[in-house]
Length: 304
Image 1: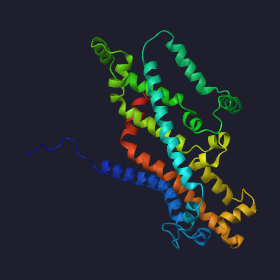
Image 2: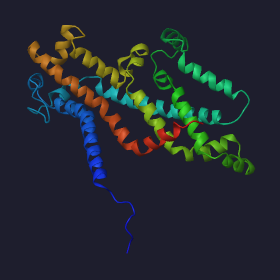
Image 3: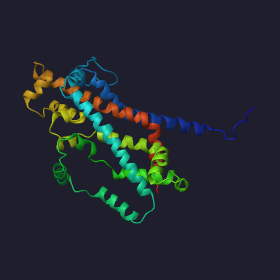
Image 4: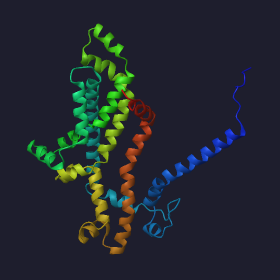
């Protein structure tokens, strides 16, 4: 027979657990309810939204908002552009970040100066105008290449990756690899990268979310509508819904030949639909990467 544990739970322990569980259920509800409200509002009628009737479930179920969004002539193209910019840009960022992090994790002359240089660049930047002028002189203005390579490395992510490599990969592995004839490139590709799956997943989340949500870069550098990412197009739709454009453009997208009041109601629902469309991929990425994300952030935050 298995022996009973020597630790016996008291009534106070059980009461504390029940209270702790209740508090966290309330916190979870407070966090999740706004997200749930946006989802059900996107499937409700404008009259129900204006009347404050949408609380727990969709009221007067309607998909008119999604129909309006998906009828936008640039939506599908912008969605594909966003996927290209996110996947290609994040992949490049992860590769460059891991290479720089490995270099900074090694001992070499001038390491402190180089670390300080990176930190300085994180705190002080030249600003938007010099960056714009340089990119234009390099011939990157209004190009897909710029949307992929811009903001390639985040110093914060670089420091997390450097700390992970320094604290999680024993130095003895490098010594053993050198004895077997491996150089830095072989050691990095065959030892460091396979052992850094956790931090790579964290970097994918960080870079992927940042690039997916980026709409401002396209506003500054892209003039061809066919090269715009999803977030920029959705931002234009929301601006139209807020009457940020001319009345003719507003009625052309939301009116369908009907009155202004009907167009305003339709625009109200479209706002919620845009939020759902833009955040759904990010939420799915977080859910898929959750088991790697928590461990990677915890290890990468240790001093090294």
